[in-house]
Length: 475
Image 1 (tube, rainbow, N blue to C red):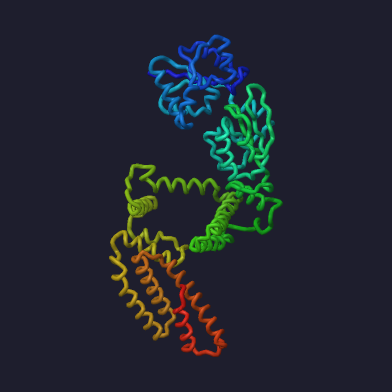
Image 2 (image 1 turned 30 degrees about the horizontal axis):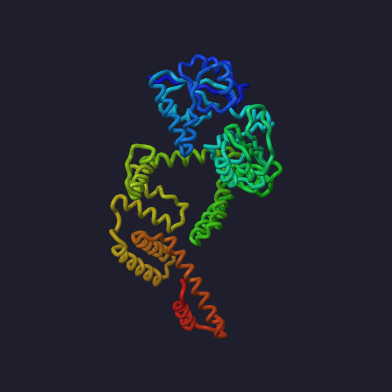
């Protein structure tokens, strides 16, 4: 059975060795240091504490991931023969320790964390996030960020590229150059952190957080903070008086504007419109927070739970080989979640808040799930002709209610043909509307070029110009 004890040497200087660690190092049957290139290792040599190091692996491994694998494998192999004490600078943050822990049980001895002398020297803010350079993942800029073990120019450059997604190149940071004793910060712009003369495992970068009004790039929680300011005691009168109901039209409008931007494939415009949609979501969440109706965490919790439950082929035991399998499984899970026991319940469950053409298509798809559907669009097309004849009869009868009913049936039949033909009815109608507008403009221009006006023309004469517009290239 492997017996591995992991000890923390501290930030590198002998001054940070704890009495407990020293005692464990002296008693270790076999002591292995991840690196012997630190003052703490020099102290062990002076005390005649025998050890070996993994420094040769640092030279032979082609990248960091290979080093992690090789170091973990070496320690695990040694522990097969004799108990091993593996000493690293900070056991809680060391990637090789994390990898070993995935494969074997270990005993961990705490020590002085890597950030302790840096935070003491920097007068760091209370709210600070700490990461290592090798596993840096910047997803928020709410807190100051301390990046430890920035041990090479290449690694510093990789960190800089991530940070530039959020911060201006001239954003002031504190760089901590190599040192074995007390730390001293060197102020510099962010763009300079990979242009220093020396790097080692003691190097670090402290990136201070910015006040909201000084930022040039913003994350999700900046938007949350901004809404709370706008709706706070000294905020905007309009924002403060909004309700769930008053914002409802804006949510619908912004969703449609986003869809239009996607159709245009104008991706800057899409990002802008998606921001408007996200604003509506966060706005609703802040109103809910104020009145206690729900919380932002309810929104994120509900959608994450839903995604995990409905992707049971990823997070559960189901198997789905194709996108069609996934869709069928998704609908089956929804029916089970909602307790549907009859096909009609699934139809009734389609939201009435959807646009009518979209709702019609969804209802038809759910009817198809129990086999109530045509096989193809050609089979459904005669129903369109039948409903068109019934509309004509209703018009001849001059019965508005009957006309409305039959027109609804005609539109429903058209949606069926569209769906079976693999076309979204909403999209088809939108394109038809745009085509009409484009041709109307061409017709209008032709009429104006002829020196005529609409009011001077009969419908038949307009039709001549309309048919001419259809011959022009374009929609």
